[in-house]
Amino acid sequence: MDHILIIFYIIVFIYVFFHKKEDKRFNNLWTASIIAVIWGILGKEQYNYNKNFLKLDNITLFPIFAWALGLFFVYQLYKKIEKNIPILRFRNKICTFITIYWTCLICIELIGYHILGIKNLATSQYKGILFFGCIHAPCWMQIVYFSLGPLYFITCYFDEKIATVTSQRGSPHLLKCYPKNKPPSTYS
Image (cartoon, rainbow, N blue to C red; front, side, top):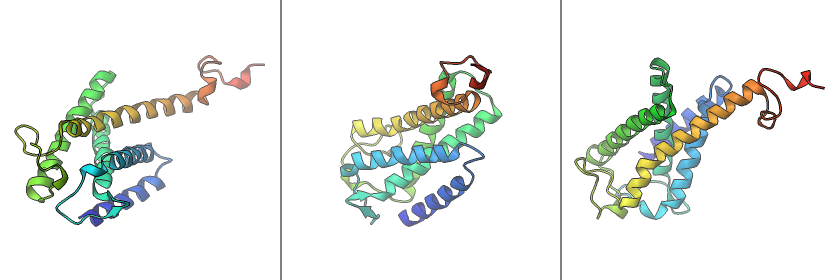
C-alpha cells in the first residue's frame, strides 16, 4: 500500500512541478511535504503499523506520504470550493478549510482503520476519538492531527498573499519604500 502512495506522490509531484509557472500548487505540495517530513521525524516513535511499510532510518514513510498528499489534496479541494463560492474574510476561510479538513481526516482514518485494516500498534492502547473509533493515539497526538491542517492552511494562505503582493509590487523589501502602483524607476 505504501508503494502505491509513494508512486502516486511522485506522479503528483512531477505534474505540479511541470505546471508550477501556471499556478501555486507546487508551493502547496512543497509546504505539505515539509510539514509531513517534520511530523514524520518528530512522531517517528508513535508509528508502528500492523503492515510492513517502508522505513528510512527507522522513520515509517507511509504517514509522511499520506500526510503530504492529504494536506495537499484537501487544500486543493478547498481552493475549488472557494473559487465557486467566494469567501472574503480570513476567519470564514479558515473555518471552511477546517470543516473540510476535519471531515476528510476522519473519513480517511475511518477507511484506513475499519476498511483497509491499517492499525498503528504503537498507539493501539489509546481510545479513538468519540463516536468514530479512529485516530487511536494519545491526546497530544490527536491534537497534532487536527492542528496540522490549520497550520498548513495558514502557511499556504500567507505564502500566496506574499507572492501576490510581491508579484504586483516588486520585491518585498521595496514594499515600504514606494507608494502603490509606482515602480521604483519613476523615482530619482
